[in-house]
Length: 299
Image 1 (tube, rainbow, N blue to C red):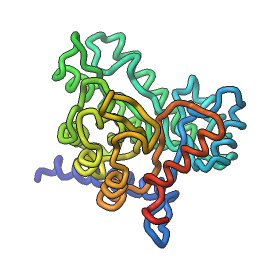
Image 2: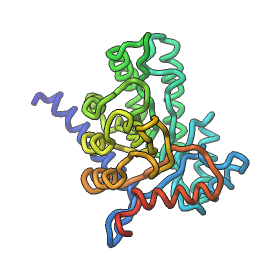
Image 3: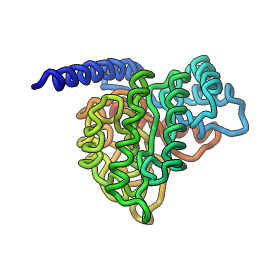
Image 4: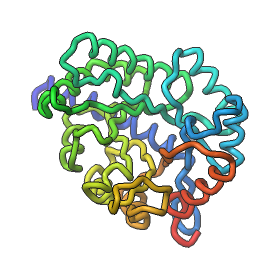
């Protein structure tokens, strides 16, 4: 190994160790019970009732059994700081942000769109840091009739790499999610896409429900392994291609729990991505998450 490659390897290894240590801290909410590991559960901020104040929403989330919040895109660092403070006071710290990336995809051939996308992603990284979060969800690319698959692959990697130094500086993981964007259509390709960045600051945000239409989530989990930084919970019924509440679709939840926790060793936040609802709905949802994945079988 050349001196340059050896230095690069050591830098990467040190960074990876830092992220691993951070992940252990993030997973501190996961508790070892007599039956096994209990995963901490969060709620997306957008799922809380819209007629409540920010503080009321967060206290409701906590009273319903949620231990953390996944924030939505914020308009400024000041607004993010305020929400982060409120969330900590309520006992529901922000663990991540759903940034997205659909509006200005990093696979676009238009330089102005790329500039906008990178500017928005940079703000999302800074806002997540201000809130006390550790990960930003990114839709990495969009394949359509005017953007070829290979172009989306190459462009998105090229542009995401420009913000990895900032992600490292802030200590925020960019977590690319599997969504219905005609991109990263197999677990093998998803794993390869992540690995090619050669950075511990680029990970996977795995959505359980998004692959049911064309695959088995537990297979994806086993392939992605420790590349998974965060998990979204959804359920889907193949017959009729219908989104459902958790436990009412075709997701094999015992296999999800077994592959994710027992085999991969995932030990941090699980967050549903579902419609908003009232207190009864949220309490029921928290109970479903406990029964299906957060609590070990028999707990």
